[in-house]
Amino acid sequence: MTFDQWTRQVLDRVESALDHYLPAADVQPAPLHDAMRYAVLGGGKRVRPLLCHAAGELTNAMPEALDAAACALEMIHVYSLVHDDMPCMDDDDMRRGKPTVHVKYDEPTALLVGDALQSQAFVTLTSDVLDATRQASLVRELALASGSVGMAGGQAIDLASVGHALTRPELETMHRLKTGALLRAAVRMGAMAGETPSAETLAALDKYAAAVGLAFQVVDDILDVTADSATLGKTAGKDAKDGKPTYVSIIGLDASRALAQQLRADAHAALEPFGARAQRLAELADLVVNRVS
Image 1 (cartoon, one colour):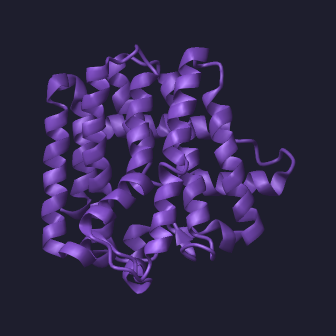
Image 2 (cartoon, rainbow, N blue to C red):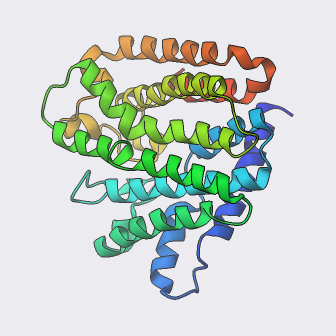
């Protein structure tokens, strides 16, 4: 099957699984569940679920187990977006090409949507498609990636850095936490959902994920200054307007493009021990970087 066919197959599976794992819109409290489904369903690149499924191919993970892990990852990701868009943080009014949750509903609802999605992610991970040992491992992996030493910590650094000049290493640290931690978890969780991966396998996947995670952010920074809002599905140019440090503001546009290509090459190099079995992971690295080609 071609990469496009594989991607469509995975995205269809994940969309169906998200519909299953989210509370139905007519279950009370219905307004909250309706808002949760509005935030999650029918949009987004689903990069984390794709990475999860691709990594699972290396360890012969069952598709149903990967669906649960992928949905949990996406719920955490979407919760972070809902909170990130609120007036107390980035104050944005568009996400994934439609009004943000606090605009569509209201701020208290958006806050609760994020809280509830975070909880629902762990409910999903503890479904019966995963045995107890894998449940425990994946819960810990996701919790670490989304907490103060991962995504939430990176967001705290991001908020504190507005209007301040960061060095390139400081910027990299922020993004390895804010964006990279959950992308790394997606790769690790996919592999851990199948046959127990060796230490060598996880180390190689960590190198791959580190390169892809940073490349994802570099490309986002490039697109913020080169693409329009309709293409992005969110407000273009907002980082510069808000005084946020980015790769483009620190090293320039051309150097950022070169860095993205180098990170793509690093990702491919990390996959060499797996040979053809890592084809989908390699293609996903290309997908991440080629958004600016």
